[in-house]
Image (tube, rainbow, N blue to C red; front, side, top):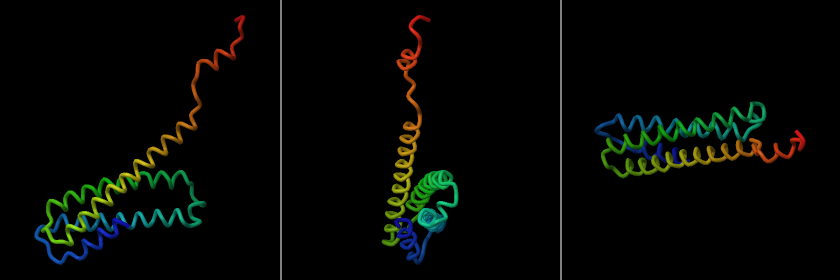
Length: 137
């Protein structure tokens, strides 16, 4: 949603002096919105059960990381090239908010992934091995 708001605010900009940053921000914000929409559609439709769920979650994991990093880069570039209009400032604010939310979502998924892998890993305790050995060996 924040990437869509950043894209809409950026589209309101009528003129620019250095347009490279604006165009890059436009591309990234639109792409981020469309990728997020695609992932949401996959999760909310029966297509999610038809494909391997681990591949969908893995794709979501890497898409979120890539989108967050590129969105942050686009926001930084746009900050350095904008003309200080109110629409540009609003787009920049939503751009930074969106990039931080993507990165926060990535950190949350990383934390859940690590918790899940720790639950699957059996405990390696030497005490259990000592209890199973015969006493007269």
